[in-house]
Image (spheres, rainbow, N blue to C red):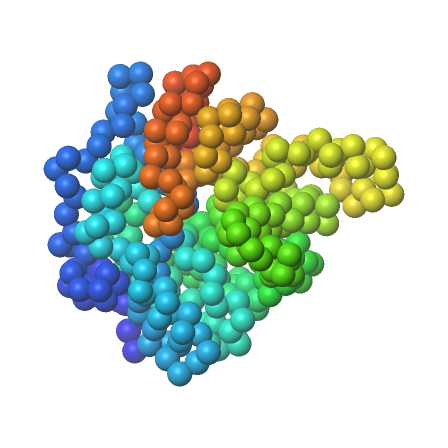
Length: 357
């Protein structure tokens, strides 16, 4: 059996076409009209933290299991890497995508989860090895099995040279702040990994969120992020692991816009905070990162005012059609300094993920 290093080398070569449904990665060419993003007369490298993808090779792993349907649905969309994806990146002015896979495997038993993550991470690493100028990958882990997730993170960083990890905002209804996940958080802190948290919605509220407006997503997704971050604060996870670097999708959900209630809650109901956290709740938010997917200039201005441009990174949510103007959102928001725009467009992520300038 080939080693993981051999597998990655093989996948990055002519056989890498399995990742993109036909053409080898070496054949993917960028358009000659690639947009050059300028700030203050200087070319800026742009990096998108919120770029979804899928690894087709996992279809063989889940064949004959209940997850086969989930994989088939994912493969029918725009999640795989191909010429069209690169064309859209060039058109929008996205130099580098930070690839992640939304966790569809948290319900898998241990051995199946191990095989899914193994193939998925190897595929992501091969993709990035073939086009290191365009893609950086966040590792997947089977966090429902914390000891296995620790091993997977070690492999992703030590063998596959990944630079971060992506997580759902909950694990089969269990909070990321649950103490049984502490060994995983300890390993994340040890590696200095950037953690990108992406929500899946709040199934407990599904009945109330039915009807018009796609509220299961429009409300459910940012709400789940809000709940996840809140527990990481109030259950002491950020105290136990103070060097964690966490980035929350969708501008951090609703929490950044109503954070004052957290502090006031500890004043009004001190028993709810005493002996559980070491600082004011809002102080923990200052160590977190948030993507820029808040849609309005006022929303982005507010994020910068609350946390500083050093904590905001660009996110597009590609390929989902929320927006194709994330670059222009940052460029055109009034009141920002050039240094703010450079940091959010790519400077912050280049530092966090060690992406060459």
